Amino acid sequence: MAQKEIALMQVRMGKQRDLPLALEKGQIGFSTDVGRVFIGLPSSSEPSSIVAGRTWDNSPNSGKENVEILTEFTPWSVINELVNKPYKTTVPANGSVTVNVQSTSRVFLEYVGFSTATGSTLLESGSVQLVVQDGTVLIAQQNNTNQPEGLAVIEFEDPAFDTGTERMAITLSNDSDEAFTVEFILRGWDAL
Image 1 (cartoon, rainbow, N blue to C red):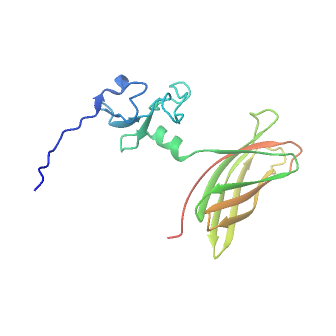
Image 2: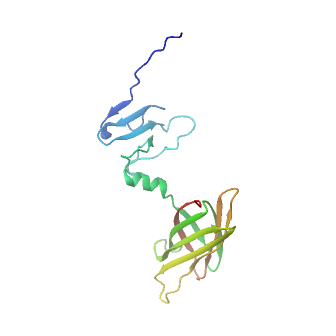
Image 3: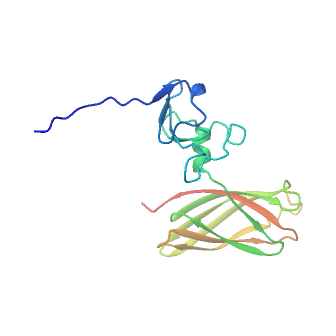
């Protein structure tokens, strides 16, 4: 019978502030004071790193040049940034654009629309619910607007769900005389 040996493998440990900006490639680091776990992926590694250029200034609370393994101690701000990746699209004046997003059969999105010309003038915000039922997509939209007439200018229309690719196509229409930029996040689940 072959003899088995048990070896102790330790990971780099210490306080979060002492975690290197870039652990060695594949090295595991554990922050003993806050319970966060990271794996090294320095921006100098091949292929080009997904963390290249990430700093505390442009990505506060990140693992810098390390990839974080999510645990119960991962700060909510980090999880929120991972879960709620915003989509962004520009819709021309009196025109429309179709977005195609990876989704489930139940999609709930929240959006804000800004004037493309100023980049900061909020036109409206709202939410959209999309539910696939027997191949048909049911849609409901609630708008909040700052337009003097109280009319919403952003309309989500003609949704279509492809069960094979699990993608939802949605047309955004603009009924105003100026282009706008829409940012939205989505969440959802499949039918139970």
